[in-house]
Image (cartoon, rainbow, N blue to C red; front, side, top):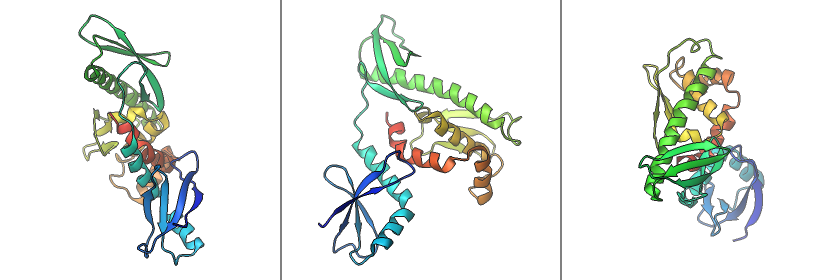
Length: 245
Protein backbone atom coordinates (compact mmCIF):
# COMPACT_ATOMS: atom_id res chain seq x y z
CA UNK A 1 0.00 0.00 0.00
CA UNK A 2 3.03 2.29 -0.17
CA UNK A 3 2.85 3.13 3.54
CA UNK A 4 5.36 5.22 5.49
CA UNK A 5 5.56 5.52 9.30
CA UNK A 6 5.45 8.95 10.99
CA UNK A 7 5.06 10.39 14.51
CA UNK A 8 2.16 12.56 15.61
CA UNK A 9 2.13 14.67 18.79
CA UNK A 10 -1.29 14.90 20.45
CA UNK A 11 -2.03 17.00 23.54
CA UNK A 12 -3.92 14.05 24.96
CA UNK A 13 -0.81 11.84 24.99
CA UNK A 14 2.53 12.11 26.76
CA UNK A 15 4.33 10.17 24.02
CA UNK A 16 4.20 10.70 20.23
CA UNK A 17 1.62 8.59 18.45
CA UNK A 18 3.00 6.58 15.57
CA UNK A 19 0.87 6.47 12.45
CA UNK A 20 1.14 5.04 8.98
CA UNK A 21 0.43 7.32 6.01
CA UNK A 22 -1.22 5.45 3.16
CA UNK A 23 -2.96 6.16 -0.15
CA UNK A 24 -5.90 4.37 -1.74
CA UNK A 25 -7.75 5.14 -5.00
CA UNK A 26 -11.14 5.43 -3.29
CA UNK A 27 -9.92 8.22 -0.97
CA UNK A 28 -10.05 11.40 -3.07
CA UNK A 29 -11.43 14.27 -0.94
CA UNK A 30 -10.51 13.98 2.73
CA UNK A 31 -8.41 12.06 5.25
CA UNK A 32 -9.67 8.70 6.48
CA UNK A 33 -8.73 7.16 9.84
CA UNK A 34 -8.31 3.41 10.23
CA UNK A 35 -6.63 0.85 12.47
CA UNK A 36 -4.26 -1.79 11.13
CA UNK A 37 -4.35 -5.44 12.23
CA UNK A 38 -2.18 -4.62 15.28
CA UNK A 39 -4.29 -1.68 16.41
CA UNK A 40 -1.98 0.99 14.98
CA UNK A 41 -3.30 4.23 13.48
CA UNK A 42 -3.46 4.47 9.68
CA UNK A 43 -4.15 7.87 8.08
CA UNK A 44 -5.27 7.47 4.47
CA UNK A 45 -4.83 10.59 2.34
CA UNK A 46 -5.81 11.47 -1.26
CA UNK A 47 -2.96 10.60 -3.62
CA UNK A 48 -2.88 14.06 -5.21
CA UNK A 49 -2.41 15.90 -1.90
CA UNK A 50 1.01 17.41 -1.19
CA UNK A 51 2.95 16.52 1.94
CA UNK A 52 2.44 20.06 3.27
CA UNK A 53 -1.34 19.83 2.82
CA UNK A 54 -1.45 16.43 4.52
CA UNK A 55 0.53 17.68 7.53
CA UNK A 56 -1.62 20.82 7.79
CA UNK A 57 -4.86 18.81 7.64
CA UNK A 58 -3.62 16.34 10.23
CA UNK A 59 -2.69 19.21 12.57
CA UNK A 60 -6.11 20.82 12.08
CA UNK A 61 -7.85 17.52 12.89
CA UNK A 62 -5.83 16.52 15.96
CA UNK A 63 -8.98 16.61 18.11
CA UNK A 64 -10.79 14.28 15.74
CA UNK A 65 -7.80 11.93 15.76
CA UNK A 66 -7.72 11.97 19.57
CA UNK A 67 -11.41 11.04 19.73
CA UNK A 68 -10.95 8.30 17.13
CA UNK A 69 -8.12 6.77 19.13
CA UNK A 70 -10.14 7.09 22.36
CA UNK A 71 -13.01 5.14 20.81
CA UNK A 72 -10.57 2.56 19.48
CA UNK A 73 -8.99 2.25 22.92
CA UNK A 74 -12.42 1.73 24.47
CA UNK A 75 -13.15 -1.10 22.05
CA UNK A 76 -9.81 -2.74 22.85
CA UNK A 77 -9.96 -2.40 26.64
CA UNK A 78 -9.69 -5.65 28.54
CA UNK A 79 -12.58 -6.28 30.97
CA UNK A 80 -12.01 -5.15 34.54
CA UNK A 81 -11.07 -7.88 36.98
CA UNK A 82 -12.53 -8.36 40.44
CA UNK A 83 -10.13 -10.96 41.72
CA UNK A 84 -7.09 -10.76 44.02
CA UNK A 85 -4.55 -8.14 42.83
CA UNK A 86 -6.78 -6.79 40.06
CA UNK A 87 -6.00 -3.09 39.58
CA UNK A 88 -8.56 -0.29 39.63
CA UNK A 89 -8.18 3.42 38.93
CA UNK A 90 -8.41 6.03 41.67
CA UNK A 91 -7.31 9.63 41.06
CA UNK A 92 -5.18 8.56 38.12
CA UNK A 93 -3.41 5.65 39.85
CA UNK A 94 -3.99 1.94 39.26
CA UNK A 95 -4.33 0.44 42.73
CA UNK A 96 -4.24 -3.31 43.49
CA UNK A 97 -7.27 -4.93 45.05
CA UNK A 98 -6.58 -7.07 48.12
CA UNK A 99 -9.34 -9.48 49.16
CA UNK A 100 -9.69 -10.60 52.75
CA UNK A 101 -12.26 -13.17 53.81
CA UNK A 102 -14.58 -12.33 56.68
CA UNK A 103 -17.83 -13.74 57.98
CA UNK A 104 -19.96 -10.59 57.97
CA UNK A 105 -22.41 -10.24 55.05
CA UNK A 106 -21.61 -6.53 54.53
CA UNK A 107 -18.42 -5.81 52.57
CA UNK A 108 -15.93 -3.21 53.78
CA UNK A 109 -13.39 -1.51 51.52
CA UNK A 110 -10.59 0.83 52.61
CA UNK A 111 -7.65 2.45 50.84
CA UNK A 112 -4.52 1.80 52.90
CA UNK A 113 -0.85 2.05 51.87
CA UNK A 114 -1.78 2.21 48.19
CA UNK A 115 -3.89 -0.95 48.41
CA UNK A 116 -7.64 -1.38 48.12
CA UNK A 117 -8.31 -3.65 51.08
CA UNK A 118 -11.68 -5.32 50.75
CA UNK A 119 -13.12 -7.50 53.49
CA UNK A 120 -15.74 -9.63 51.83
CA UNK A 121 -17.64 -12.85 52.39
CA UNK A 122 -16.81 -15.10 49.46
CA UNK A 123 -15.32 -14.20 46.09
CA UNK A 124 -18.37 -13.44 43.97
CA UNK A 125 -17.26 -10.83 41.36
CA UNK A 126 -20.70 -9.19 41.44
CA UNK A 127 -20.40 -8.62 45.21
CA UNK A 128 -16.87 -7.26 44.86
CA UNK A 129 -17.91 -4.96 42.01
CA UNK A 130 -20.83 -3.62 44.05
CA UNK A 131 -18.54 -2.91 47.02
CA UNK A 132 -16.07 -1.09 44.79
CA UNK A 133 -18.79 1.02 43.18
CA UNK A 134 -20.13 1.97 46.61
CA UNK A 135 -16.62 3.00 47.70
CA UNK A 136 -16.14 5.05 44.53
CA UNK A 137 -19.35 6.96 45.24
CA UNK A 138 -18.31 7.66 48.84
CA UNK A 139 -14.89 8.90 47.77
CA UNK A 140 -16.34 10.96 44.92
CA UNK A 141 -18.77 12.69 47.28
CA UNK A 142 -15.99 13.58 49.71
CA UNK A 143 -13.27 14.55 47.21
CA UNK A 144 -15.54 16.49 44.85
CA UNK A 145 -17.06 18.48 47.73
CA UNK A 146 -13.62 19.40 49.06
CA UNK A 147 -12.24 20.37 45.65
CA UNK A 148 -15.31 22.42 44.76
CA UNK A 149 -14.99 24.43 47.95
CA UNK A 150 -11.30 25.08 47.26
CA UNK A 151 -11.87 26.14 43.66
CA UNK A 152 -14.98 28.20 44.43
CA UNK A 153 -12.95 30.10 47.04
CA UNK A 154 -10.72 31.39 44.22
CA UNK A 155 -13.69 33.03 42.46
CA UNK A 156 -15.59 36.22 43.22
CA UNK A 157 -18.95 34.78 42.15
CA UNK A 158 -18.98 31.41 43.92
CA UNK A 159 -16.83 31.70 47.04
CA UNK A 160 -19.76 32.50 49.33
CA UNK A 161 -22.41 30.51 47.48
CA UNK A 162 -24.13 27.42 48.84
CA UNK A 163 -23.86 25.25 45.73
CA UNK A 164 -25.88 22.00 45.65
CA UNK A 165 -23.76 19.07 44.45
CA UNK A 166 -24.95 15.63 43.38
CA UNK A 167 -22.96 12.60 42.26
CA UNK A 168 -24.34 10.50 39.43
CA UNK A 169 -23.19 7.60 37.26
CA UNK A 170 -23.28 8.98 33.71
CA UNK A 171 -22.15 7.52 30.40
CA UNK A 172 -21.44 10.62 28.30
CA UNK A 173 -21.21 13.65 30.57
CA UNK A 174 -18.53 14.47 33.15
CA UNK A 175 -20.38 17.36 34.70
CA UNK A 176 -23.49 19.50 34.43
CA UNK A 177 -24.70 22.78 35.87
CA UNK A 178 -28.45 23.41 35.81
CA UNK A 179 -30.09 26.81 35.34
CA UNK A 180 -31.00 26.60 39.03
CA UNK A 181 -27.30 26.48 39.95
CA UNK A 182 -27.12 22.81 40.90
CA UNK A 183 -23.93 21.02 39.86
CA UNK A 184 -23.89 17.34 38.98
CA UNK A 185 -20.63 15.39 38.58
CA UNK A 186 -19.97 11.94 37.16
CA UNK A 187 -18.86 9.45 39.81
CA UNK A 188 -16.40 7.94 37.31
CA UNK A 189 -14.45 11.22 37.38
CA UNK A 190 -12.94 10.03 40.69
CA UNK A 191 -10.74 7.72 38.60
CA UNK A 192 -9.04 10.65 36.85
CA UNK A 193 -6.01 12.60 38.18
CA UNK A 194 -6.91 15.38 40.61
CA UNK A 195 -6.01 18.14 38.11
CA UNK A 196 -8.59 16.73 35.70
CA UNK A 197 -11.18 16.63 38.49
CA UNK A 198 -10.39 20.26 39.30
CA UNK A 199 -10.71 21.29 35.66
CA UNK A 200 -14.18 19.75 35.31
CA UNK A 201 -15.31 21.37 38.56
CA UNK A 202 -13.94 24.73 37.40
CA UNK A 203 -15.86 24.33 34.15
CA UNK A 204 -19.14 23.78 35.96
CA UNK A 205 -18.51 26.62 38.42
CA UNK A 206 -18.04 28.99 35.50
CA UNK A 207 -21.51 28.08 34.31
CA UNK A 208 -22.87 29.71 37.45
CA UNK A 209 -21.88 33.01 35.81
CA UNK A 210 -21.96 32.12 32.10
CA UNK A 211 -24.63 29.54 31.21
CA UNK A 212 -23.15 29.00 27.75
CA UNK A 213 -19.92 28.14 25.95
CA UNK A 214 -19.18 31.59 24.61
CA UNK A 215 -15.83 33.36 24.39
CA UNK A 216 -16.67 35.02 27.71
CA UNK A 217 -17.19 31.61 29.28
CA UNK A 218 -13.82 30.25 28.17
CA UNK A 219 -12.06 33.49 29.14
CA UNK A 220 -13.57 33.10 32.60
CA UNK A 221 -12.56 29.43 32.75
CA UNK A 222 -9.00 30.39 31.84
CA UNK A 223 -8.75 32.54 34.96
CA UNK A 224 -9.20 29.57 37.31
CA UNK A 225 -8.10 26.68 35.07
CA UNK A 226 -5.41 27.96 32.66
CA UNK A 227 -4.66 24.45 31.34
CA UNK A 228 -8.27 23.50 30.64
CA UNK A 229 -7.60 22.71 26.98
CA UNK A 230 -4.90 20.19 27.85
CA UNK A 231 -7.06 18.68 30.59
CA UNK A 232 -10.00 18.36 28.19
CA UNK A 233 -7.81 16.53 25.67
CA UNK A 234 -6.53 14.15 28.34
CA UNK A 235 -10.08 13.46 29.52
CA UNK A 236 -11.24 12.77 25.98
CA UNK A 237 -8.36 10.38 25.36
CA UNK A 238 -8.64 8.50 28.65
CA UNK A 239 -12.38 8.79 29.21
CA UNK A 240 -13.13 5.22 28.06
CA UNK A 241 -10.82 3.88 30.81
CA UNK A 242 -12.48 6.02 33.47
CA UNK A 243 -15.98 5.02 32.36
CA UNK A 244 -15.19 1.32 32.35
CA UNK A 245 -16.93 -0.77 35.02
